[in-house]
Length: 289
Ligand code: UTP
Image (cartoon, rainbow, N blue to C red):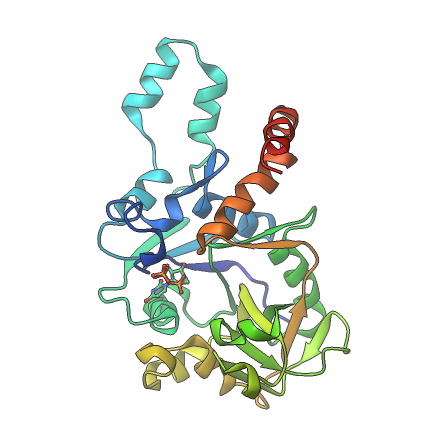
């Protein structure tokens, strides 16, 4: 029987330099899109996909992340006294069940692969999901939910992919596979940040992964790769041919919230999804044509 995905890892140990000075004292993953921080969208997506264990790989100055999923007693007492029931529900909506959340620290930001490796003992010998909160995907069926459905058919390892402009391949992990294959693309190879002229395709890895625990063995042996970082892409590439490995072309609109323009666009798109904000946002957008 294929083991279900019950654990998700959230690598949130990066420095978020592209958002300085906003990210000097608060983590990038606490930046809000409309009224929820990026990390909360990621956790809600994992919950919708059936995840029950949430592993956060954090770093120094990231304690706001931990606080966000805990009680805020003073605030809650104040809201209770003022009978602000709706706001109290919102404050409670971030709580995870006792024991569901685990936080570990990546002491040095040595790359995404290293961050995932830090979660090894908390994940154990189980398949698991990885969600990068700064990649947001807007769709009626959340991206990890789509992936878990596909995984229940094919198992193995799976990476979310989307086509990017040819000149942007050097910003992403790029998949070598047949782009005409449909939603599930058998993976022939993976390359981290190839130059456009060397990229095997324009299919870029977007921040959703389903991985088998054997990836940890390769991560533990991994030497630094592109940019001097321990790359998840390089460790995943070692699994190709040994285990099923698919790219998954998800449906939905993706926003790169690690980038200022992408983050702003996500705010607009998510606000337009929200009934109370749609009209005022449409009205002010007209002024910027
Ligand atoms: P990014 O490549 O966006 O890096 O990481 P960053 O440090 O967050 O941001 P910039 O580029 O300096 O602005 C993608 C994801 O991987 C995590 C980040 O927290 C983010 O969720 N990450 C990255 C780690 O957890 N540890 C690392 O060492 C690097």
